[in-house]
Length: 216
Image 1 (cartoon, rainbow, N blue to C red):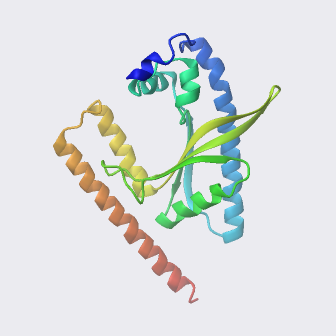
Image 2 (image 1 turned 120 degrees about the vertical axis):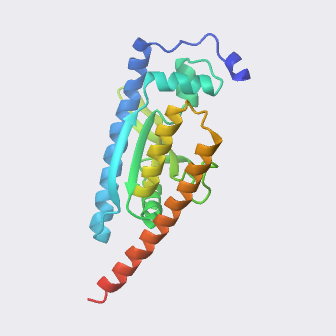
Image 3 (image 1 turned 45 degrees about the horizontal axis):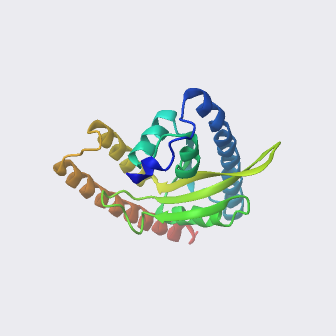
């Protein structure tokens, strides 16, 4: 918890300065939404196939940011918000099949308009809870009258099945205030294994369908 001592003189987060600061994150969200939409359109045009079921985006609330800073051991100041929270802007891309996830990751990686800062492959290496997804921490350029700035954002790419499991996991964690009983944890983990198996079966089915479609 030593991070609590790192900044005691910075401007504490309040409604006024949060609304002012978060504007830059709103600009980054719009920029990232546009870039992803263009990349998906280009992919569809090139491959005559849309790998994306839907895209969702959000800006983290002031309450969520303050709670996250405190949980990480930081004083909830504007400077700590800027320097230590990388998912204030969040984009979630939900795909049909497992291979689509990696196609989307590759597509974003080739973009010259955003910089990838960090990759977290929770599909190859799921969290101990069973959570699976592919996360990218990116830097998004925004252009202001004062010049260009880079704003961090998180992109989550996952299948429909993974998204279903993650949604339930979030609701369960909220219900138990993150102190989930061991029995519930075990059942959730078993469910995550079933989700992984379902993704594999659906991928096999898709490949079988494509095999017969190509024979026509």
